[in-house]
Every structure is written in C-alpha cells, then in structure tokens.
Amino acid sequence: MPAMSATVSTAVLKNVPMFASFPDEPLRVLSTVVTRRSATRGTTIMAAGDQVDSLYIVISGRLKVMMSDAEGKEVILSILGSGEFFGEMGLIDDSPRSASVVAIETCELLCVNKRDFNRCLAENFDMAMAVMRGLVKRLREADRKINSLALLDVYGRVARLLIDMSEDVDGQKIVTKRLPKQDIAKMIGASREMVSRVMKDLQLGGFIEMRGSTIVLRESILLPE
Image (cartoon, rainbow, N blue to C red; front, side, top):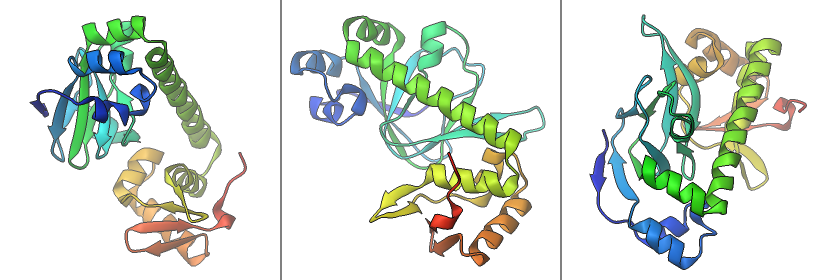
C-alpha cells in the first residue's frame, strides 16, 4: 500500500478538477477527511478481487489499470494521469475490484474513504456529476477499444492508441509521456515484436517522427472518427 500522510490543504484540493468548483466551506470540510498518499514505481495500489474501500485521485504521476491471467499474461486496460480517479465503481456497487492498479512511476494520490465518499456524493452535486462524467468517459473508451479490436488491424490499433495518448503541443499532436513498446502491446492485444515492426513502418512511412522519448504524429496518421 502507498505511504499515507496527514492533512491536505484546500489549495491542493482546488487544483483537482473534481473539486475545483466547490465553495470554500465544503472544500474546508473535505480537506479534513481527505488523506494524501505517495507510491513508488511498481506499487500495487489495489489488486483485482480486493474489496474497494476508497476513492483515489491522482495528483501527479501515472498508473496502469491492468488484468492478468493465471499464467501471468498481462493486459493494460488504461493509463491514468493527473486529475483522473479510480476506485469509484466498487464504492458505488459494492463489488470487488475487477482490475489491478499499479504505479508506473512515483505518484501522489488523494484518498477518500467509502463513508466520506458517499456523504460527499449526497451533499455535493458537482462531485456527483464529476464521478458520472468519469464513468461515461470510461464507457466511451471501452467502446472505442472494443471497436478497435474488432475492426482495426494492428497498424490501425497502434495508430488509434498513439492518437488517444497524444497531446496538442504548438499545433502538433505529440505523445509526450514515455510509452514502452511492451506496454503498447499489452494495450492493443499484440506482440511486442509486431508493435516494434509497426512503429518502424510508421516511422519510415512518415506517419510518425521519433524525437527522443517523444513521438510526433503527422496528419497522415489521423484516422476518421
């Protein structure tokens, strides 16, 4: 489990999208029940089958949501970053965690226990809507992933993932976070060797440009929505 520290300031909470619109007094009350935790790379925050007892919000760092079979074969469902949250589904339906969440770099997290989470949902419309928007976003992402797996070849799946992971930087779409080929393979259901071949072909074809650990996407790689 990640290390836990005491009090969280209202200034920290104000920078979290979920809490940004909270008035000062509810924010102050919330600051008394939220804890701050740090986790080093490789730390399992929650494991599949666990009974979820808290909502986690990412302040900094990245984590992977993953599933694995009895033989240890791993599938990465998503990568979470700053401002995103996890653990809310188990708090809502009281079901065990369906996937594991592991830190892929040092992370800072906020934690709200189940009792306080339920009270906050009941008392704060903005938080309830933020949780609903998060759930809808994940449903849409799941639909897109199912669509990609069913309708796109490996080239299309790699391209779709790069587009989804990219950010707009000075008018260009760039994947700024390190994305190992092994992780790409686990996210799209292909082998690492196949991903390496596709990435090389995309680079030779002028669809992407490698700049150190970043990937610049050319317009020719964009797929129709």
